[in-house]
Amino acid sequence: MRILVISDSHGNTRNIERAVESQPEANMIIHLGDGADDIVDLEFVYRDKQFYQVAGNCDWGSTLPTLGDITIEGKHIFYTHGYTYN
Image (cartoon, rainbow, N blue to C red):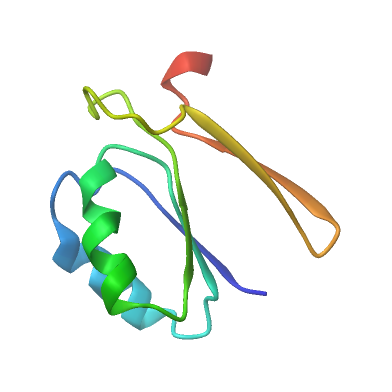
């Protein structure tokens, strides 16, 4: 399992696309906030990828959680934007 972690796209979905295209073996993409709406569009483009995301400090009004955790292949992964943890 290859995981691509990105953050702070701030509306620049082209940069996310470049990152995804540069890592074609990545099965999963975790977005760590500040671009909550950016992933919505890309989920339709990259239907073979799993997407997870959390809200960042610039995702005002987002209903996304501020932290997430998943277990993959026996490994627990905690992810957050980090602003609530200083």
